[in-house]
Structures are given as structure tokens and as C-alpha cells.
Length: 309
Image 1 (cartoon, rainbow, N blue to C red):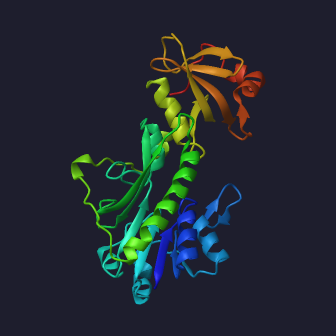
Image 2: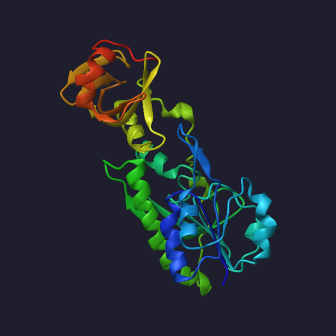
Image 3: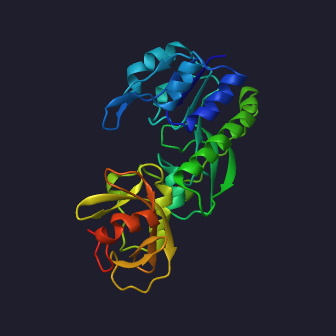
């Protein structure tokens, strides 16, 4: 049996490990290695690191069509994707005898797209989960093989939920693969009328919006942590907000500093206040809200100051 696995971030690795231990992976396809940070050091995606450590051949095309002939020539029996980052063309989907399946981090048809984990927290969903489906030309629209639900906790961040769903996806994939190989799957078409979308996060979304509610901002802080993270600007300088809490406040002007508490600084939102419990000023290390307040916080964000728009 020839199996090709396509994935990129850490989310993909538990599923790939399960497949390789049980059946063997013949090829990993992942995104190109990229420069990271000010040093410009080239960093491999986690799936390349996994493949190299298990002596699995790796392809890293910028565009999938560049290696299509090479993949097709392998005549794969199964293609598995998990957060790969590119849509597979019909020509490729039709090749594997057992089909092409995807491990997706939402309960489809809800949250189709590239950022389902962050969007689930940001939008205040009570539950999310994993869907394993047959792939189709349209994004995340294929027939559903199996799902597994997971409750989102009040303190979950994008990072913590990412890790939980990665392992849940691996477990569910392990459960369904025997039925796929035994041709016992009874897949269910998705209800298009129920579809919602979780598009990739744009840079402009990372800035907190104090004209919205405090709870919306708090959810965004958790959803975008640790990456890409949220921020506010003070006199043109970025201050990343890594952890925040909704607190009661009867201030009238959204975006204005309304209180200095022992835990940190409170900024007025549309309704209540947002307490900055952990921040990272530009060029400095992350610190708790109390340390920031007792350092430069009182000078940088005095009570009454309006945050930059």
C-alpha cells in the first residue's frame, strides 16, 4: 500500500505519526521552509522535521502542480491531508484507490477554511471538534466519514485548542482507517445550508478594537495566542496583548485607560473594561500586567489616555 501524507504545522504531526506507525508513509508533501525572525534563519515546517526523523522522502513545492506528475507516478492508494495549506486539484483526487481524505479541525460544515481553531474561540463557540472527510474540489466540502466533538473551555487559547485537536484528529484517524481500507465507509454529504467559513487571519485583524465588546476582545486575545497574537498601539508603538480579562467598568469612552489595578491596566471597551494581564511591549520580553504597570505602564498608559486608533 502506498500512502502519501500532506501536512505542514504541528497539528499534522500526531496524525502522521499514527499513520506511519500503523501503515507506513511513502511520501510527505509539505510547505517550503521559510525564513523566521530578524536573523532570517531558515526554519523547516514541523512535518518536514517529522519526515526527516523517520527517513520519509519529502517534497516542498511552492505550488502543488509543480510535483503533480511525480505524485501521480507513485500511484498512491491513499492520500491524507491535515492542515496542508493548498487545495488538491481534481486530477490528483481521482488517483488513489481508497480516495483522498482530510483531517479538519472543526465540525463540518461549520468553519470551513484555514483558521477553524482560532475562529471557533473568537466567535464564542461552545464546541468544536474534528471531521474526517473525503476531499472534493470545493474547499472542505467533501462527504463526511466521521466526526468527534470537543468542548471549548473558558481558558482555551488557540495554542491549547490546537494541541487538543491535533491529538483528537490522530485518534479519530486511527479509528476510521480500517473501515476505509475495508471499503466499509458510509460517508454523509454535507448540508450546504449549514456551512460557515473560517478564513485565514489577516494582519489588520490582530489589532484590538475597543469599539467592540470587552468579551469579543478577550476571545480574540485567546484565539490569536500564541500566533499571530493581538496588539494595541501606544504613540505608534506596538504592545502585544497575550492575556486579558473582562472586568466591570462604567467608563464612557471606548479605547481610553480607565483604571490601574494591581493585576494591570484596564482599557474601556464598548461595554466593560479589558484588563491587560500579560503583555509584550515592542522589543521587550513578555511580562505580567502587574510588572508592566509598575514599570513603564503608568507612564505609557496613564489613566485617561486614549489608545491610538
